[in-house]
Image (cartoon, rainbow, N blue to C red; front, side, top):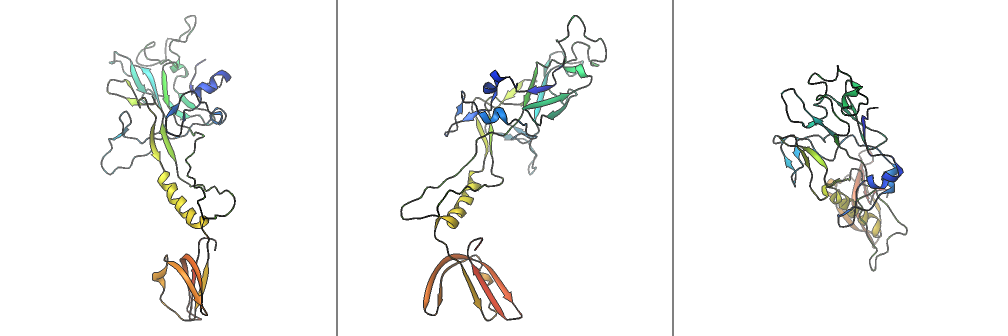
Amino acid sequence: MVFAALGAKDDDDMQGALAAVSFDLNGELEEDVASTFQTIVRATLPRLPMFEGFNYGQDPPVDNNPAGFKPDQAPPMAWVFGVSSIEQDLATWIPADQAGFNVSVLADAWGLLLNGQPNHKLAKGHWSDGAAPTEHLNPIDDEVGVYDYDDVVITIAHRMDHRLQLGVEPVTDVAPGSGHLDILVPGAECWVLAPGTIVGVNEFGELVNSGTKPRVLRNDTALMAATMAGAIARYYNKRASARIRFNQLIPLAHLLGRILFTVESGGDAQVVGTPITRLVYDCVEGTVVMVAGYAGQ
């Protein structure tokens, strides 16, 4: 049997040890904390939280792409240990695709599938009773040219059960609406590069890792802060809306987005304090309707 699907084991006694890394509130790695979520929900992402052309062996990463070039996210990576040509005397770590393997992700597990031809290309050192075939292994050498599935390194990405969040607590003399409101921010992500992640090979064919500490490669807290500011303006304070009709066509477009503080009618002033969001011109009746208020008002 040749193991071509390479990833975390499903043994009960191994689940906690192979669960994804966990971090405390200070961003420090919690080595002894296992996540139940990550031993139940297993799926390998089709892209890594890293970009092609970057050297993640350095901190911060070094962009080796041409100026102005926008790289794609890198795909999952795999390396096999062996020789890549008959001229090569010393075995090194070789990208699996360069060694002739097709690399694909496992949709329902953590890991990758390495598919090579012939099927026993990963069977070096695992034949019994001298049963190793003597042909069709590799044009380099029948013995040296095959790879050992125990000498494969992969780098993958998967979702964690950690989530970015911002919260606000009630303050004195402010009475927000009752209840608890959760607002999801599409596109807000946090990318964490785990300690010791293999990120490539150097010019000598040696594995290069990401270092000894977890590294945050992307943190969209600023995007969430902008959403939070809008939520505070909308939900945290008392709100009012207004709809004002003018019986003549008046150029008011310059007022869009400005705050309508008060509306006076018949000597009575009403505090509004909301932005002017819409102007409706009716050229038949010769009127303009100004609408002020937050979404949904």
